[in-house]
Image (cartoon, rainbow, N blue to C red):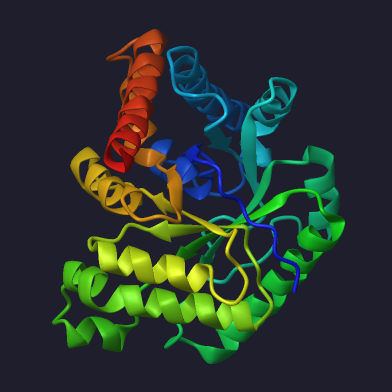
Length: 305
């Protein structure tokens, strides 16, 4: 078992969304034409400029980073590399319930061509879910984990979502907030343990927000178990309100082992929507994205003390 890990502060602005941009932001279905692809790429450029403005305005460059996809963000990935930013790129197909590689067996060639700081995966995994599905996913994830460790290039960032099974929701009378508070934390611990046992070794776990510090502590303890002391954890935003995201960041920041966050839609979605319908200027959209990102950096750092 090769363990690398990542311990430095890490404040990620993620905009690697693909399916949600196509259908949610733009309302398009099916294969995109060149003009549609260019429109999404242009929207992502606005987000990137917001990130750059925040860094120019005082967010520490060495702690800041972006997460953007190759499909719509190839130019941004290239620029981030040239400018020495920390940057991550996803390896998964967008919007699928089951993890699979965006570029199939050619995943390694794409990682090597981009050489991101982090190769990121988004995985939906419930230890009480479909066992065969989980086994298939774990096999693909081990393949990626082994490649990244053996090639010793990009670090491995693992975004873990634990969607509720029907029976689990029924136990809390369909209350998703109760599931998040009472059920999901233990399922996350079990999932991390199962994936570790399957040989999947992320350097950073990207974790859904937790309301209790004791749950954050348990996640860190699990992520760092058995010689994994250098592995880090960050909080994801899940498209929640500013207030909820700040709560999650504040809770996590006070727990050693949580090194930062990855908050995307809460930063950029509304400014982009307003810019697209021309109720605000491009400059204002960039300013608002920068301001929200800075707000989350300040919230995490002030809670950390």
